[in-house]
Length: 251
Ligand code: MG
Image 1 (cartoon, rainbow, N blue to C red):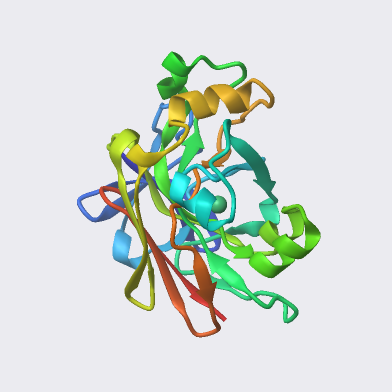
Image 2 (cartoon, helix red, strand yellow):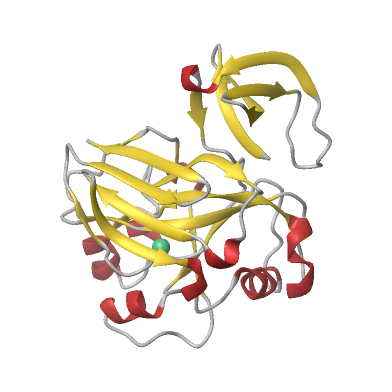
């Protein structure tokens, strides 16, 4: 199943993609009871929204060894968590405009997952029932601000710094997904989720030992090596093979 959120006459609606069409739902898909409202729209005509309704966006830093090293450190011995504010949420095809004082604006292509039911103290072997599916995410970062502040809140949580989408798929095996980030069409990051330092079952067990995840919450699983800067006019794409491509425009 591929779940999508679309804007219909200004109102957000969840839908399911089938044969290039979006069949919209009453309510959300989190409980698994898909209540179709009878409307059908061509996917190509739909304005897509982030396919999630988070109360929080939980991010894992340094989950690929090579990325940890390019950041100037050794791979951490446990998942390093941080949050991005809800103000960062951005849509597929959405625009990103950093404040004028930002000197270095980086892409970070990542696999993300969306939570389907409240999760607290989840055991690694039970995580599947808590996950609606998987999508692409760009953990956009004001790198100079992150370094200057010595912690990550401001550099990671500027408005629009978290594009998510284009849809959520439950049809992929998250243990071995190829991920690619492209800047103006050129490949700048390539990774495979098989390289994760912490795999998703252990990641969700670790997170939910400390914080309750709610339906619609997002977990970003970390970026591979190859981070780099973007400039106004750039087009950035995060593709996870088997899911789709998330494209955004830097203003
Ligand atoms: Mg990241």
